Image 1: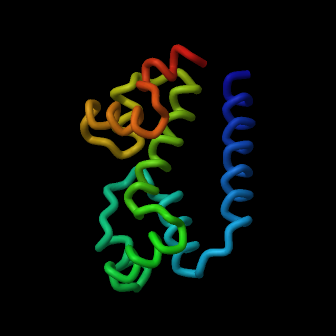
Image 2: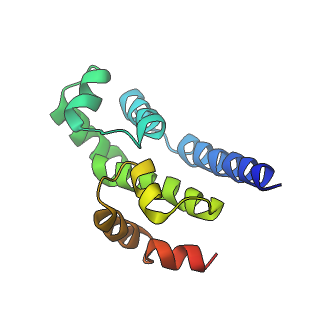
Image 3: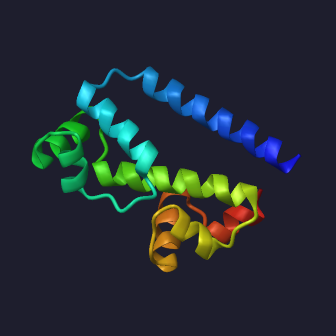
Length: 130
């Protein structure tokens, strides 16, 4: 039953994300960037790498993303990583250290700092409050 609960939760989260981004009318390059980050948020992402893979100048990508979304690209990346971490915390079978690595943070302390800056809770506090 835990697997089916997870599948249901993941499907709900995915549908919510699709709905949020469908409602916004971003340019093609910003939509591609959002999709790129969703698929690769746990990877070691750099502005240069994202821009190169999307065939756009890094400076142009950074400015365009910020102007259309209101967020800096790497704030968006951080938020996506934290959303993934929240899902893994709800699942409950990994330690916070394992989750931090799984979502792309090499330092558990920095992960906890970012988690708290986004959610206003520590990862352990979030886990206990579920």
